[in-house]
Amino acid sequence: MDLVASAIKGTLDMLPKESHEWHYVESVAADTAKLYGFSEIRTPVFEKTELFQRGVGDTTDVVQKEMYTFNDKGGRSITLRPEGTAGAIRSILEHGLFNEALPVKAYYLTTCYRYEKPQKGRLREFHQFGVECVGAAAPTADAEVITLGKTLLDRLGLQNISLEINSIGCPECRAKYTEALKKYFEEYKSELCPTCLDRLDRNPMRILDCKSEICSKIAENAPKILDYICDDCREHFEKVKACLDAADVKYTVNPSIVRGLDYYTKTVFEFLHNGLAVCAGGRYDGLATELGGVDLPSLGFAAGLERILMIMREQGAEFPTPKKPDLYIAPLGENASAQAVKLCGLLRDEGFSAITDMSGRGLKAQMKYADKIGAKYTLVLGDNEVETSTAKIKDMQSGEQREVALPEGLVSVLYDMSIDKAFDDLHESMAKLEEK
Ligand code: HAM
Image (tube, rainbow, N blue to C red; front, side, top):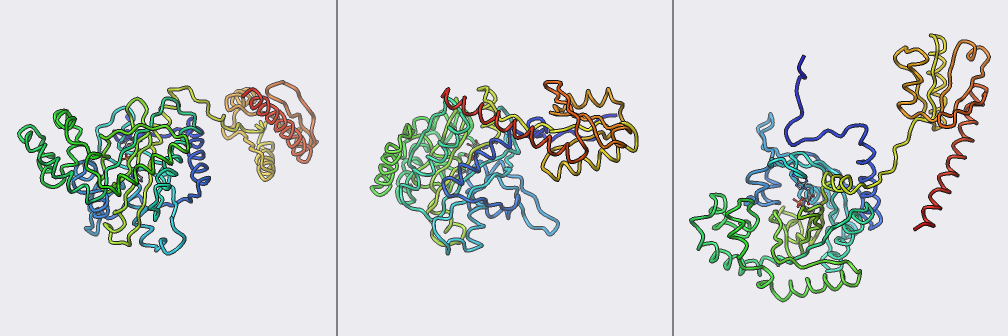
């Protein structure tokens, strides 16, 4: 029979055998954010469509072409979040968090949805780790957030990552720049794609971000924003660069970065690997007011987890090995099976992971299974063992066997062994540290 359905194009399953890799990246991301004073925020997977139209901008590719938008049964227009910033800011405004200590520093690990053409590193459902630093106008905030991104990628051991930064100014300098862009693109009116023709009137900066081959070719020689930014924005950018220099964060200024979302102002940045953005963000000083809230100069970034994992795997990164079961109990017969379930419960209460048979298999098949799942120890529980309350525990690596009293002896032997193992691990990590 055929499978009922296959996964939707552009989505990936995370399988149990690779979950430890995801957990590792997620925990390093969360730990790094906490080191910088960020706490987790979780917002709904869907929001009112208007939030993204206003926040992300209705002339962006994301809003015009890529959103998963539908009417719910009550006739409301709902959109699956294409990114995490708009929802986080909506939540911070709605809950009045700006009345507490500023800046509000929030991080998230979430799914995002964009109807894009799936390709390497580009999915329709993907995961972001993001940080938002809300209510912080000083250039030090920009440097801190960029440094957080770098720390994360360094801690994960990603190689060949470059950082590119730019300033796209404030609405005032943007007005002059928009005029210059309009003038430039007017000359190519007949060659622009229909979406960009519309953008020419409404928001010519978005043409710089068009993925069509012809538009991006034309955009290559367009005026550069850095030649139009006002004194305030220039001073801000100079201070950000000075802070990055002081922190020894290497970057290049790329005047072509404009980013694909409308809310950005002043500093924007991208961490790239072979031209692919792994982590990207910037300042968005006007977003809170655009969403009807108070004035909160803010900035943040988001990193694509699939892209991070893809690069780590390509670069042969070592992930911490997942914990294997401490003990497999192989019961022989019904009575022993019931006792094995009880014994497993006792061991789990003590913090050991204990597994037993769930398929009524014979001894040979059970041992094969214990070996496959990598159980550290095994214990055979027959009628005799149940009657005498003693059994032999076998170290699967050395083959060494020890007789233990059930259940106390078993618990204490497992404790002793786990202490020995902890010492071994400690010595091993100390040796590795010394090597470094
Ligand atoms: P973004 O550049 O659209 O920015 O996305 C951030 C990151 O998400 C990208 O650098 C990439 O790693 C990943 N990403 C984006 N689209 C896809 C996709 N289709 N498939 C796989 N990965 C993808 C934002 O989303 C902003 N909200 C970032 C931000 C936070 N700015 C300020 N605060």
